[in-house]
Image (cartoon, rainbow, N blue to C red; front, side):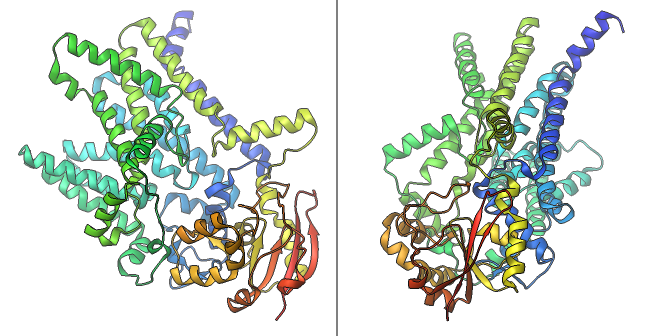
Length: 586
């Protein structure tokens, strides 16, 4: 190639280098470090990864009418559906491998979905602005979403693309788009996005009906039923529990926040600027400033030209209004009179978090950024390179911000720290957190045969991952009666710490053994931070639930007083964790 051709080729395809380089880096780090990687614990290793491993241990992915061994025995139907692309990864691959593949596929899904939608909407303009399409899609794809539902977040533009195809109705084989729409829930999640997508679809149908656009109305109305059927088919376990289950769950006793109007206003502003932790999209660093500047400049231009109608028709402005609407809904969820009204009018939705409209904002923020950069990109040569620079800056802001689920950052940083300082950090690696070899040794030594147990000083998920049945556990949807029964076990601790009592009674998803002095005794680090070595537990209630073993990271000073007998002390080969195993007398 001549120098000029090389320059033109790089200008066209330069985006392939940062995207390909990042994917190779990510795969190299996670597969190179293996289970010595540092993976986010909160709502991740302490929840879904252990559940998937538990389903694998008990061969329960496809079973019906069975309980899984945690929280005293919970219906398999309360756990993720097998008809999910993310779940399928865990059925096929080892848990750690499935997790890493999920991270990589989420990036590809987000990028490809963004590209499909942009190409559909841009038409002939797409080829000229392809780099900015791919790079913005890449930024959206690498956002460190809640890992278990990363596919659901990343695939939102895919859903919009399918609905646009249905709306336009240009293809002869129209039924293929309905088939694809029916299959879409394989990468989505009803409670986070599906219910809202269906709601927005119904509103679109009503709006088009008012404008008497009957053909699009009929096409989208059919899409509502097809998509709803897809969600029912893919998440049939969830719908069965919601519609036909008669068990009273902890949803009935959850107490939501009740804020004043000034507090709600503050919350709306905060979530507009920062988002929320399950979807930390880092839009505040690049997307928000760029969109704010563009919003002002663009609308001043319309006002000066007296193009008033354009202000209300500009897609960028509409996206920004949608973002603000979701933030307002998020805030108003904490306005108790409104929440009570929704639950009164729609009793089946009691406990339903309608503020999850906020989960659409990451896509909307990067869609707004794309629209702003697109117009900059098409304005001229230097503006094009400015747009390229801004989208690269957005990518770097996501990659280099140590958010809760930025496993790549935490793994690289901790490994570098260990290399240059010659000592490990206090955090657990994936391997150290679950300590499979340690618990294999313990189970063999005590002759474990599936008896009920509990964890103290660490997450019950560790026991669940290792095939130990637990009376404690973490789940947002289980029997209210069991919550009350387990409360008898931890009543002595709850009576001593009011904040812990409120945490359990008003929520209760984490049915853990709590400290009677510290706000939290559960440690995800090598160091256990405890101010009291005593355990405050009703051993009689523990026995009544069938409990036999207590696994503790703390050597209990009052073991005899709570009818516990020490069976042994076990330490991992690398010294990262020590477990004291007790049995309950009786």
